[in-house]
Length: 476
Ligand SMILES: *[C@@H]1O[C@H](CO)[C@@H](O)[C@H](O)[C@H]1NC(C)=O
Image (cartoon, rainbow, N blue to C red; front, top):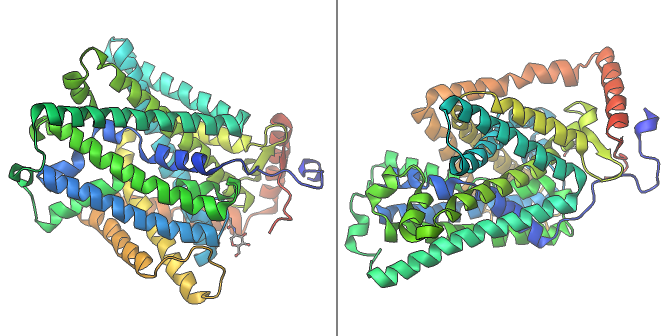
């Protein structure tokens, strides 16, 4: 296979092209998708009152910040791309790491991408065009597939373009939310509305079950804070920029989320928020008048940016998995002209489009939150385990031990709650995870030589087709 190894003495590697702003763009851009515009009501429904809902939003932001700080320690201690995959590998060995890759491949990544792309397509077509539901259904899927291909192409062609897209669209969504916040503040002064009246706490539900569900929705709205850890190797000066990007992004998202919710409640009553199919649009209709069309436009921009960030980051997860020998080696190839993981991006694109064909892809979201929580629990367990097993290791960022312990408890809660609320989904989720074990033993551990030969042929074919080489393995 020497022909596909890179010849030059430097070796071909993914370049370090991401600065601090790009890092913030990825974290904020991936966390803020369409949720805050479309359905920020999960928290409200369980919290019961506006005031208590806002408290849950603030606390969820703080708890996510704690999780992200733990990942700052992990990411600077193990400065490898792949995020959770690399940390689980380092702490618990290759099999659990493979299982993370397995569910990432089967559920987490393609489901997330498909749903983001569908939201994008729905909001574009809703505005431009009405027709029969059947035609609309097909058109939405087609447009979702097209946008996935377009962003895959940009990501294949140039890392700089992909990060530029990310920065611009993250900027746009922050601008949109600042617009909503500003008009909320304006309305507050003109109508004399007082959010902090005693009525704000009316209807608060303090039963532990409801509080737990409210937190569950709240924390889910912040998910995505670990995405920058997927691309650690491409960060310039990762020891500084990874923790900094985390420390800037999470408070920023928390403040934006809380103020946007406040703005909604200045204009809309609790009942209106609960009834609205898309809260920001109801808000825009009331406040922006003839400019109300800007809101769907911003939802489109926001999902476009979120999809770009997710494609960029998760392609690196599969790339790293293949480099490790956990996926066909072809996925670890790098294009010699553009320095991008073209086969991994194309593979991810195909997976996402397959998921677009599933009629009820939204159902899969119930598995996503549980499975994601389970592996986050494993990563933070890994942090605690490495502190014990390897106390002298170099940790450029070392958080107070209370933080990972606290976050560990939160993860336990996030994992056990669905066992009561959705035992079916938890069971199936676990089955999908376990199904990776025989796959691991058959295809990776005890791989028959003939599989290797097929793999080599396939790698060579892909290398020629996409003008790629494998990264030299001399780096530590
Ligand atoms: C997984 O762990 C092994 C052994 O510690 C190490 O050689 C390998 O580089 C790790 N892989 C990743 C992707 O972190």
